[in-house]
Length: 127
Image (tube, rainbow, N blue to C red; front, side, top):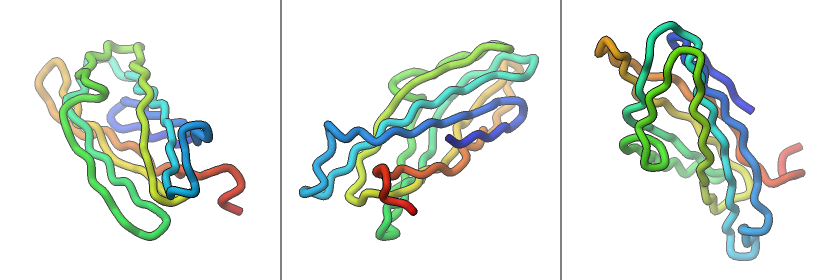
């Protein structure tokens, strides 16, 4: 699990290898990751967009950016959380992800909430 807090926005990510949907013989390893974004502050924020940097074990880097998360731009009130699960296919059994969410406060201030690096790994692939 990875956790980062930026301007009282806590982003926690928990990855999971999906063995049933993966095909190691075809170099396809599918991972789910569940993100919980918690507003620890005292003002409402909205998640506007996301930026991910995905690196596989061969050092290939893919950048993924776009509006919202899973088709939503959630508004998160003080003390509340938004939780979602998404997926990442990799051609290698190990990789990493990290990034940021572009957030906007109700007052119109914009900032980036850090998504701390986390490892995507087939069980027992990393010693």
